[in-house]
Length: 105
Image (tube, rainbow, N blue to C red; front, side, top):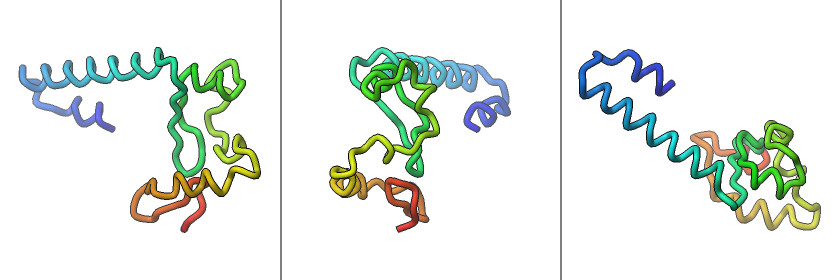
């Protein structure tokens, strides 16, 4: 959506500089995440939506693609689920807040 908005700009030199700076910033961020030795994952509504290679290795997968779309709770030991939910409960996902596993709270 952001690139579509930028693409509708007036085409001025300032717009082009802003677009270039944004693109470069996104590329640096992407490289930082991809090359990080630490596992990084992004979840939304209880499902994994992005993960770097280090994160995939921590989960025992050869690629993050194997894990995208899977429920995060499926990777938490039963005896640890309540503690994980308590830790993550403060993370809101919009006006209709949901718990970490995608259920409305």
